[in-house]
Length: 118
Image 1: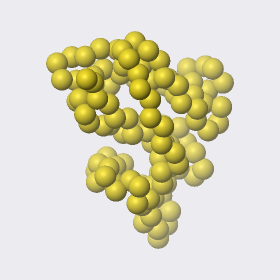
Image 2 (image 1 turned 180 degrees about the horizontal axis):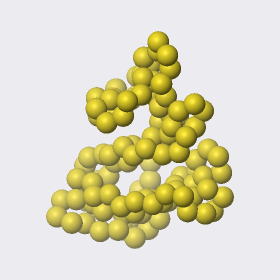
Image 3 (image 1 turned 90 degrees about the vertical axis):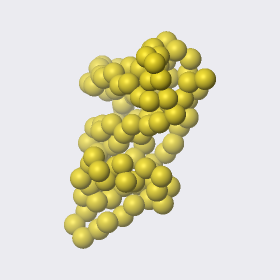
């Protein structure tokens, strides 16, 4: 989970984000990126994984299918156990994607999701 914000006169990048910072800057227009936490899930197809988020939110992620060399994920975010966001993504095997999330502390939360199928 990444906190992204725009701070006047500040260009702060957490060193832990160095491997993906060029991707973040090419898609998002923030000046500050800080890694809040990292959680790894080892999920089988059609098995849900849950990540607790700030503000009584939960992200539910589930790999649902393999299409060629791409993994399909169903991603849902709930607040107080009510759905507020849902999407499906096709992710190249052994790659990642970053999606924007809810507002948080004068910025937003970003989620970098990576996957590999054996």
